[in-house]
Image (cartoon, rainbow, N blue to C red):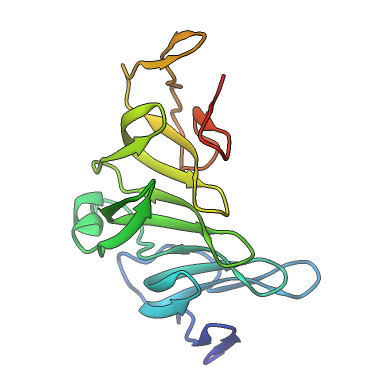
Length: 196
């Protein structure tokens, strides 16, 4: 298979040639109905999406062909390729969150079917500070947005205290396996109220 035709152009899947940083996975995967589920690219490419231009090495799709998630890099962390080497090659992008422009290296960007950004997950070791209606929140995981662009959830760092009308809360959940930023501990209604 030379290329795969998608809404975002002709994509060249991973050829399977030996590469110490490539993950062992299907280069092209399909849903049970035959629609395209994911493409693991031979090389990271800059692709155009409704939310902007992003480097992409792995792209997943909704069944209708719209982008679901992109991973700017998707290398295999091993004795031959470290997380530090992978992160060092990760690109930065500007994201508008709660009216602030944040410069972030996304590990994963999750989209709504409309193409708007739903969540951005950070690389291990990175952190950002997000302005919320409950105050300034530092996170090492990322953030989730409503389709309108307002903040939906965020995972604060350990020890964060949020003051609410019902008293102080410490929204932190120990998650030994956490890959994506959506459905985090500190949740907001679309109007900005904290969900307790």
